Length: 389
Ligand code: TGC
Ligand code: FAD
Image (cartoon, rainbow, N blue to C red; front, top):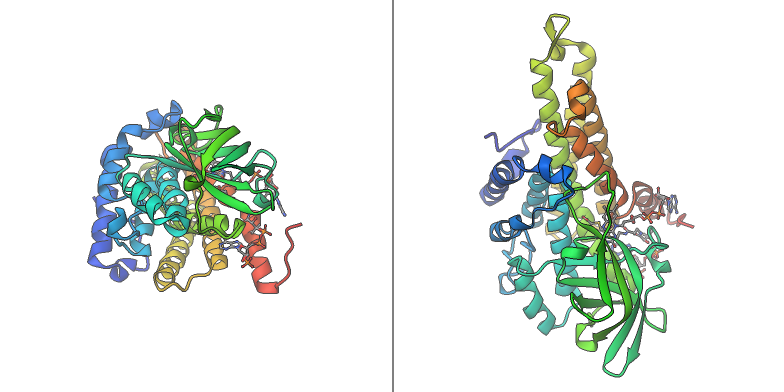
């Protein structure tokens, strides 16, 4: 197995021995445990729950957190490499891991009480509990500040009412991080446990994207949540946005993995497929596409590598992370479509991987802030003029 994979600018030289080991371990896991099953899982709209214990044992959940909370104290580049390798397999597998780490463990770690951290984080790290993150609503997608889910105090409880939609892991989750507005209009975060009276989750069917991932609607109808389940250290909606930054970072790395898989599939095919008595790789138009793919992958790799090292020093600001999400997901989507075209008719079959990646990446392009929203985030940063509304 070539663990280095596509690496035109020899980034291998920059990774530490530990980072290489982690990447190689996840590469092997995906090759052995995900790849043989992914066509069937994807076609059958099925998430492989049975892989959760192995993913947890390898450290896919919250690896950057301190050991005392079940983490492994890993750096951000190591975390990124894990996301890259998981998404080489399928964006749905990476989504499960990034939601668990960036959108469930991170808010508990950053805004939770010591009791909440000590209870939830080790269980989530071990995969004994699965989490989801409920921010988006049917009428509040790109603009979460317009959410209508409410939280009102009643004695020692909070009463939550509202609907959250498009929630990854929703129906398989033991705990949902739910964002709701209190009577003062301040957004608060709550840990809503499965089985809470008034809280239900329903799987969204009919997706043509991320089919090996669970996506759900969450209903809160007079759900009673104890004050001890409120995240005490949030600062309004900014705290929810801080979680998005963590997830966007992982997505930027994940997209590189999907792009690498598509490029490798297209190159291998182009070298073997004979038309006009020659491998199609000998045609200039095919070479042009392969070069375009490799060049864009190389740029995407350099972007996340540098971003990761900046993040490790606490120097990456959220607009820089938006740029990596924006660039790398669009790049991966373009590459997946190009690879599918090189594969010809066979490229539409589930046995080829590029179209599955392309269809998955349609969701990745939209979630965690659409491509357009990332554009406007960066636009505001460089001009100081917000143009969202
Ligand atoms: P705005 O005025 O921009 O911000 C309020 C305060 O928050 C700060 N802030 C951030 N901080 C950290 N990271 C970020 N990404 C931040 N974005 C904003 C901001 O600096 C400000 O701080 P302060 O101190 O000045 O008060 O608030 P706004 O309501 O105008 O928001 C604008 C906008 C468009 C940036 C925001 O609404 C946005 O990001 N919208 C996109 C929504 C989104 O990304 N949703 C994702 C849902 S989760 C998901 O999709 C999971 S998919 C996962 C998977 O399956 O892998
Ligand atoms: P809208 O906000 O309605 O946008 C529709 C279109 O209008 C887009 O093209 C958008 O870019 C554009 N648009 C909107 N505003 C502007 C503007 N100001 N200027 C220019 N164009 C604009 N959410 C969660 O909370 N948790 C999850 O776990 C989660 N998982 C998801 C999993 C999947 C598979 C998908 C598809 C989504 C998931 N989401 C999740 C929701 C996701 O974050 C939203 O779909 C996303 O933020 C966009 O919201 P929307 O779909 O309502 O689109």
